[in-house]
Image (cartoon, rainbow, N blue to C red; front, side, top):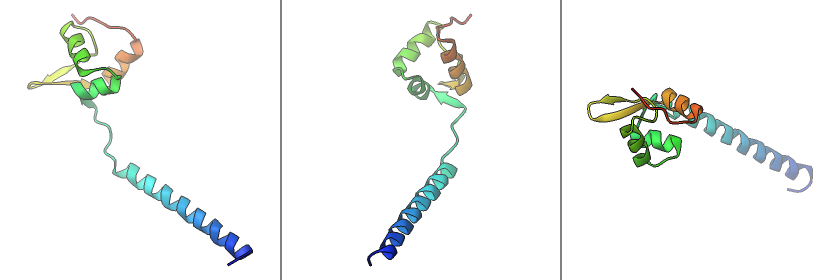
Length: 94
């Protein structure tokens, strides 16, 4: 094919590829699990971009975001971690 037919075919291929990519992205977003409200120590540390041991040490000093215990697991609420980060400073708990 040459001329207008080839140009039309190329345009249609680009359009179809773009539509397929968009549909795949939408479907992947639908299938992705929503972010959990509770974070483990490792997840909270990764979210805050610090080492897990740094978060553990802050918790031992009574600093850092509020946490709760579920058995032996330490859990942080995502909203508490975000609020603590927004404050931008350590806070000792009483």
